[in-house]
Image (spheres, rainbow, N blue to C red):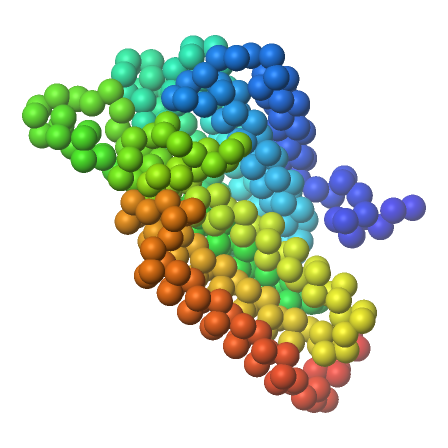
Length: 327
């Protein structure tokens, strides 16, 4: 009989609405791939099915991770279930409207103010995104009050959800008017679009393959993407360190692993800040200037030093810790 207390053994313990959302994203991913192969329509210089594909992959991964995280709650399980359910409904609605707007209506979604219908759809999608952000923030608060047997994993969950929250927040920077849009507003008119992914250049210019991130200007989608997927990266780091502990004795202590997880979390937060700063200056991620390279080098050096100190400073195991481990 499967161990129902272990969420990695059976999916029954996972948050069902979020698992359903992840399954729907899997279907959308397959449909989008077919669309990319057989539908040659484009919108803003990109295949019309590319954005649904990217959202399907990203939302699917996020939903599965959040579904697993909620199984770890020992306090506030009922509240966590509702937070996850509201998140699933909000994001599921947003993705559904995205697919409808792009592939059926043939209109852009984000920042589109061209018609009353576009404005209404944008308002609903924006409301869903803010609601999902609030639900993620609520899950972060719940995790602050959880105590897991492995302290490294405990830190990874707190860092990961906090980084995801910060990554979602960077999306708010996209909803400020560009200089061209501001000029239209200053002239007393309403622009057809309000906000942009890119900084310093128009949306739809040259971009990286598949991802579409601008190669000629700043792009706020990069820190947004990096931030929200901290929710997967930090727990994976914790699990990876746990596996490596079988071969490296220095990692057997969960205090050492926790220090390394915290170092990774701090470094990841620094990367998120660096990418946001770079994008806000209208600089492409593939063309960093001297100051960006200097900041990146300093960040790498700081992380390397902190990781080295974490490995060299081995905590002493006192009687209190031995008693806790024996329980």
